[in-house]
Amino acid sequence: MRNIVVVDAPSNLGLRPPAPGTVPGCYKLAGALREQRVVQRLGARDGGVVVPPRYDRGDWKEGDGVFNAAALAAYTRKLADRVERHVRAGDFPVVLGGDCSIQLGASLALRRLGRYGLTAIDASPDFRHPGNSRRIGAAGGEEVALATGRGQEDLTDLEGLKPYLRDEDVRFFGIRDAFRDDEDCRELAALKIPLVTVGELREWGADALARATAQSFEFPHVAGFWVHLDADVLDPGVMPAVDSPDADGLQPGELVALLRPLLASPLCVGFNVTIYDPDLDPDGTAGALLADILVDAFSPS
Image (cartoon, rainbow, N blue to C red; front, side):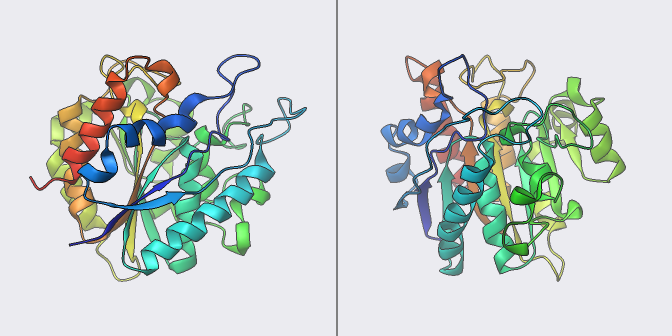
């Protein structure tokens, strides 16, 4: 029985402002899930908060690279310290974001420890980088590219550990079928990085795919894998409170069926959830659903 430790990572440094003069509200995700008693319902220990720097893009403009880069680099190291400590202790960290850039903290932590993989459950692959896009800036849409060594050195080579993830150790699930022919998805196919769309997941079965994915990390040089969940993988009919609510996403039962075998695998060393924005959920129903999904995913089948 693993000791689950819930750690808050309320960083919004990787997202663009939703409107001039505002900041992304996903930094409230952890607080909203705690209001749903997710720590108690998971039977978890409280691992506290890793406090992020202030969101301040200064005079950043398009073409300047990733905004908030210095703050992101500092926060990635700080979060990595916390995640590393728990993994070394044999705990199972559950990290409540925040935007998707918090995944860099987990990837750096695990890179310090050895070779680990990533299973990313997301509506889009977050693989934007200077080689395939001119619109570089928001690390929350670039974190997997950064973790695999693509992008500016002040984020891709922290502590001289570039890359934090190898291409062959990354898996994607829940990508919208409409995105299959986008440039970054075509690049992933050329790199032979596995990518399963919503339609393919329904065709092949979430449980079977998850079990096969966990087994795919069972080879000598890989110590385990991390699971990254972006709430926008859910259909906006049930999860509208995200910055990019794209149609034709997963239903809650499908997501639980995918998560449960991954999180139950002895090779899975941790998990994070990102992007849910309580500012877009005034009655709290989407947050309550997300909490229910997490609790169900950690429950025995």
